[in-house]
Image (cartoon, rainbow, N blue to C red):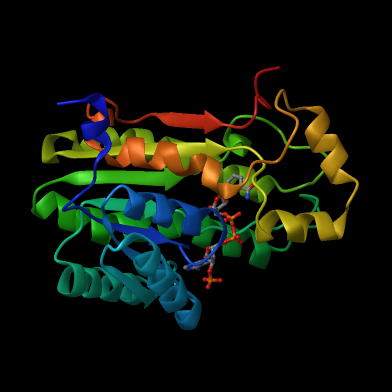
Length: 259
Ligand code: NDP
């Protein structure tokens, strides 16, 4: 058996929240290329179905596109039921859905604070509870949470304390979950990207285009990476290649946090 065989996901099924575009879309495609059947899950039904169909056409695996709001527990329960019915089970959960909002802390509304925490943190909890819970009751699996380098460093010049609080929470949640679920055969790890070129970043830059230069000046690899640059890591974390790794967060940020 070659080391590359350890990365193969044939016979596995993955849910990717926020899989319709950006990072989630690239992760869903990478998992499919490695052989996993994939459920793409986000709020916009048409976008989820289109992404699922395009990934199936490109890779030949089974896919499903399901509409879900990760902040709504009933939605998440339905997502789990549909995935199991249509794709036969759940082995990998990628908690990727997330949003960013900027405002100085002393001007941020409670509504904005709650919106970000509900999506980035409560959503991770709800999907873990139900999709991860299914793994606990069946044959185990892996949970992969989308954190951010914002869990470890201050960002500049944008002001977004709630985003940082949410991603710091994701890292801590991941560590504790790994500890609690090891006995159930479920591993939990997180990915902490730096700046990845997606709609989320385009929206931030629309507020203040000068930010790009400030960001690039802090990176050792002076570019914003495409979402596809995270594909190898998600396949690694989803597969047997990472079977001895749990509770960790992998930082992929072009060296932004190094100095
Ligand atoms: P995008 O805005 O491009 O995509 C976000 C995805 O999440 C969409 O598919 C969206 O679909 C879905 N989504 C948003 N809210 C919900 C919700 N309540 N329920 C279900 N789905 C939802 O973002 P990115 O691809 O840039 O980011 C993906 C993740 O990566 C986020 O967690 C983000 O914080 C993180 N990240 C991003 C970085 C970057 O530089 N881009 C850096 C570090 C971390 P829909 O609107 O249809 O629901």
